[in-house]
Image (cartoon, rainbow, N blue to C red; front, side, top):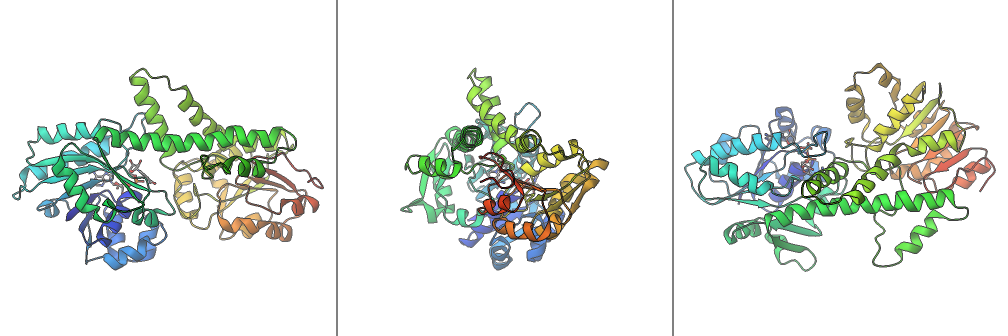
Length: 461
Ligand SMILES: NC(=O)c1ccc[n+]([C@@H]2O[C@H](COP(=O)([O-])OP(=O)(O)OC[C@H]3O[C@@H](n4cnc5c(N)ncnc54)[C@H](O)[C@@H]3O)[C@@H](O)[C@H]2O)c1
């Protein structure tokens, strides 16, 4: 198949690389020429500057020039194309609805080029972006306006989780394809032939609207489950004496019907999708007069959780942040990525600055550079209080407290680093429950406060 992947962010780049691995001729197209130059170089460092996913740069290097090509010129690649995947940004408007500006601009450009092509073979435009239910119909109407011949539309939502995107794209739980016509289902089956009759992977064919809805319901369900543990489980462990959050979690999730994924309490879930998608679904449901209270609560609990630990540090641990130096460990929204979009660390930083800290000493194994871009974009002198370091130890050195915001595995060994680097009185705020031997720390005179358990003052267990 000749495939164009439009938009080479997290979703598009992974889709392009993995489709090329299965022997399709893939043309990855983006309007961002710098990105295209970086990907075309095949150099890991340049690729990872934009998308840092385990295994991705290696795969791109292998496929480059053989099955995978990068371009920022659309007209030369449209002739003879079978499938066009749209992997474009769909950011939220302030009211939560999806902003389809990028999407519409790209679709109109494709519509014009497809209307003018010489080869009138069947071509399918496929939404991989998360788009409001009904967007495939909208896409169809644009193509009609441009009188494009022999064209179909499909919805094929993406479910990848950053950090494990390549392994998931090679072995997804499911592939969801929504089309109206058999001939379009057939074309998508050829693209995904490795999954169609797979014993474990569910290959689901349905209507475009159902496919679009599956993506929203899945993401909303995941965030709601996370919010349940953060809003109910964590509170029980914090407020009711002798309720042990780890035992609670293990006891509850021993039931096969209840997932362990999402049951680990935290300082909120970030990333570019959860918040955006639940707000968009709320907006879509309100328009058809559906009560959205439950979804609003899921969203609110998650937002509350991002700043809650700082408030607890003040009210429960009696810590005054004013003029203090705080080490912030972990900036990316989760481990194994440098993605800062909607990361909980952003809210932690804002909250610490609001409380008058003199310095934030930040460290992330991958996201320091990305974080600087995000914080510098504020053009506010306050953000100059953030300094970036190359190790946890350097960040902790000379600080009065530390906050763990991302679940990087290396933070599990922090207690030794803390004991060697800073002396009590010292407050440890663990937003990810990363320190298993916290009792040794409190025995040594440190104060330890984690999501899901009461503040442990020095000497307390
Ligand atoms: N990131 C994820 O983990 C994830 C997972 C599932 C679904 N999604 C959804 O997939 C979509 C894309 O997400 P992403 O994270 O890859 O976004 P992204 O912002 O990382 O990438 C989008 C890319 O599209 C390019 N672009 C913008 N306008 C263009 C145009 N007219 N023509 C060609 N390229 C254009 C941008 O330059 C950028 O490189 C969103 O709807 C998102 O909700 C994302």
